Image (cartoon, rainbow, N blue to C red; front, side, top):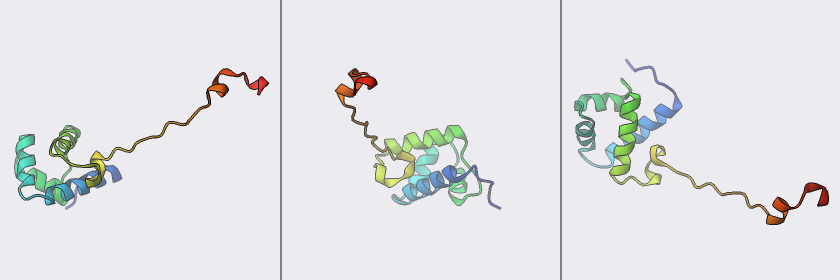
Length: 99
C-alpha cells in the first residue's frame, strides 16, 4: 500500500532522490548510514510506501549537495539565477512630473 504523499514537491523530491541513488551503486546504503537509519527505510521512501520526515528531507538535500550533485541532476538542488531589472539612474533621481 502506498503512503499518502504530501504533494507534488515531495513526489519530485523522491523521484530526484531515486535518480541520484541509481546513478552510483551503493548510494542507498551510503545515505542510510549518513542518516543513521536502516537501509530498508530509504528503500521504502524510494518505493513510495513511506515518506522521509522534514528533518530527513533537509539532511538528504545536504547529503546530495555534499556528494557533488550538479544542478542538472535534480530539482532538489537546482538553483536559477535571477536577473535584476535595469533601472536608469535618471529615472531614480528625476521626479515623475519633470519627465
